[in-house]
Length: 320
Image (cartoon, rainbow, N blue to C red; front, top):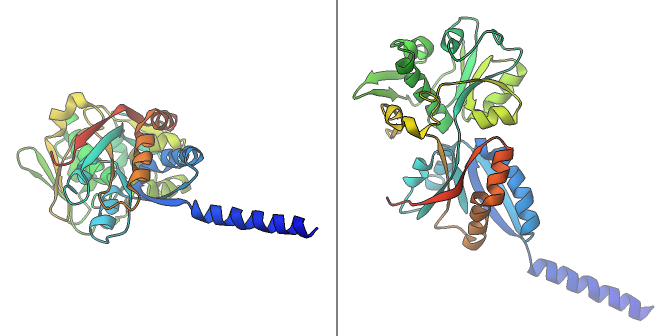
């Protein structure tokens, strides 16, 4: 009996010791809110494959994710955003390379309870949104690429539908938000964007889902993948407007947005980027995560989550 107790005691001692010695690596990942569902699925598969790595994800607007690193100096191993250009500008202090791994497009999402849900379509959506009894929303362009892409899509719509006053008709009541004609269209974003009677603004696009599903708003500009993931109805916008098509990049570039920081962003096809940070505490494990996200298994999960992968992923030098 004494030997049995001794054996059991030694077993638990060595088990506890070995478990603590092989403690999990906590991998911190900041990412765009629109990646929340595919990254949650990837995390499950990845952690089964690498049980010694604990992926800790933190979703936000992509611009917020960058500011957490550059302004707040929060520790982070990997950053993944909805517009690779905003992390490209973090070089050379923070990153060396970016992998371009997914695409998306802008749609107008709604539910069966939305006003005029049976009438809205690709040809009349701007008339529906302009109605005084309709409430709609987009994310804050100073925090979230989906927000400034919404404004870009509306500006492009003024060109596509030949409606010069479309931008002011839909957005003219937001104080400080302006559109100028300067070698194309330049949209000026104020520091503070206040909600109006008909237009709601939230920090990131996924925060609009609760408003939409509760009936507080009728329509929201979202990424198509997010609308699909949440079983929402949506209006497909023309490729000349939805920022999805490489064939229209010369058209998109006619529109620019100036954020409240003064940074100017040109409209271009939507491409997601992911990078290992130079100050990553766990660079080897960070690379494993990036390899997984941008590899075959990651691409399959993106497809299952209604998002278009770039496969194989394209690696670019962040200093270019």
